[in-house]
Image (cartoon, rainbow, N blue to C red; front, top):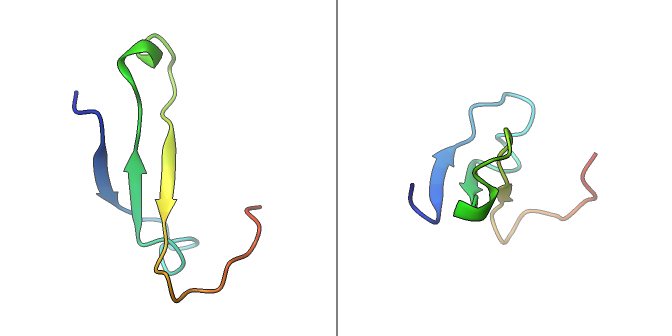
Length: 51
């Protein structure tokens, strides 16, 4: 597994705001059945709190 993997956001609800997702899962978290994901937004998009 790479340290960072990028993916296109396929969610109709969030892809306009965050078109890409960055998976930052580290090896020491492999035992968890979850992923750590950072939404990537365009710098010119207005910021708002996550729901």
